[in-house]
Length: 307
Length: 290
Image (cartoon, rainbow over all chains, first blue to last red; front, side, top):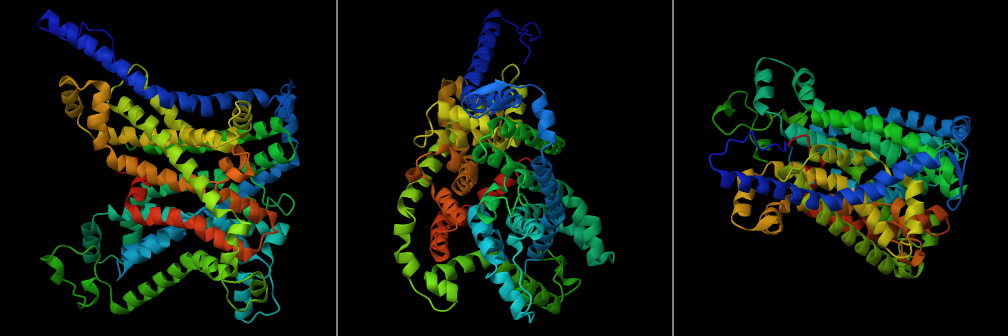
């Protein structure tokens, strides 16, 4: 990296010059090759972050903006919708343990490699390929008044009980959370299965010969080995929770009833495009940016600790 | 799997190549198998619902009984699936093309042609991976609209490309770090030049990484709603995922027809996934083991 050439011991003058120009030419080529990527990221991600900061202090309808100042922020924090969205995101965090534990169990099941496990693996991952719009559509049918859930309840003999989870403020978020868990199963199972494949089978074998039970082997050998994969899955799940629910909400509830299923990302969309309040939406975006930034730092540290 | 047929032995497995797991008892096997069937049923449920529901007419769906092809035959008049699949294909392929054209040289640069501050620039680009579109949605939308790019596909393609670039840069850089420097060095000394080395040496080596980026981005972009919804203004240019979501949210389209449309939208991504499963797994676990 250093530009000083004096440190490189060169016996003759000519090769020294040649090496220097080669190095410079290489650096130049590096800049040229990296430039398109840098430009794209700066124009479409970097600059908008700066603009969001500016516009968060303004009243903005997309065309004209007037400077208001820091009072936009104090005003925003007095808005109950923001707190409702943050609360909804917070409550949805309760699904994360399930979105990790269920895939972990499924991965361990698959890792037993019973007959046909490859086919099962393909089946388990199949929902991962399809859009959350489609999964949301199916989930909407599942939870609907005349949907599968009520059919199951009636088939179990509780014919007088009927649910309509998406129709009630208190239950819609639960339905959304259950759908979220389902949508995360494929990805997380994939992660854990990859982790299990890197586990040396002789370790478990040795523990088994030493008389350790299955649960004991799982707890003392398998789980510690998987810890890095669990961390990664945790971060990815939390990020998805804050930035990938839009499709599900858009199709299943539209954020309602009321604001019962409006999360931060949906609130940004709703505030900007339904209320036309671009300034406040930009401000909400920054709050989301800070939240995911914190999670992102955790992930960068995870990746970093590996290198 | 032959292990199912052989009786479980505690000590006999020393000589043969070690099995991945000690063979559990037979009853255990059946319990396992049963559990796996249960999970399979749950995971296949969406496909079952889509298939069965699409084979009903509106009235059959409401009353519960009977099957017909009505929803399929009327599908194109309700949802312009042909046009929408075409739009999805155009948007997907263009964005992925840009992502590859931009990400591959950058990955090469950050791993083999390092320049001053290249590490810092690399880290900044990688951290852009963590910025959700919603966080910058409002300025992004206004910028792209003011540039007049929301009329056709251009705006959406550029936004998708920008969102996919950080990951592809990360993946290519990590991938090329595993390639010995001497190989590139030799090519450049042999007079290939940097563009020549990129085209003739790096590109052929990078095929697995290219496949990983393509598969991951295809599924991501094909399945996405938000960008297509906001950055493509003409409703006639809508990708299929967006078309479906808007109709579903409108609550006026018949459910069987929506389900038939869902199947059409799900098929390409499912085929790509089934065909290139291993690249998907590779991409997901990138950076954790390589």
